[in-house]
Length: 259
Image (tube, rainbow, N blue to C red; front, side):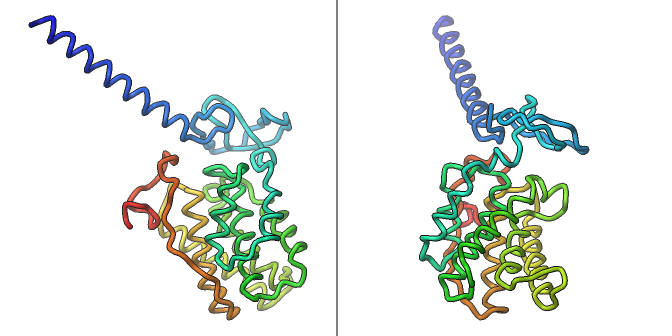
């Protein structure tokens, strides 16, 4: 009898250890390092780092806990493929377009690619809904170029999420805004502020998917109010929460638990 009890106890402990190891493995797979899957660490000060992929050296605050650093250019490698997607897209729904962009192989769960994707989705939907874009391909190239200039981690280190900045870039492009413009300048900055407010009201930590959805939803309302163009909108239901270790769960307006 004692032997049987011991065997059951040992078996139970083994099962618990197996489950814990599986949880740890899943947690590692869900984290952000593109090289080893380990969690990222965000430093308070810039440190000279070398990209493990291209070996470029530059100052950065972000690396994985094992020391791996991937520069923004390598992190977003392949992102230019969205140009072909958007040039051939007919949807008037920027959320739908964003989902297609985020499903492309280059897009990670978090990262500076979202600083381009938001504006690109809005620009495409705006054009398809009848908004005036004089040279769409040229406008898209501008969106990609400008969005790439916003680094990862801007939300925390600059106090301005790149997804929100991307909406301002979108308005800047369609209005042909410059630093010396008047109403175009007002609209571009106002758009960014509206998106930032919607993103900030959810609190942190950052989630590039949640923040991108918030930015686009703010822009849909803004475009209708200020440009008279009605973009299509669908209900957002997140399908990626299980791969985000920092997911805020029911606090997120797009959590499946709330729908």
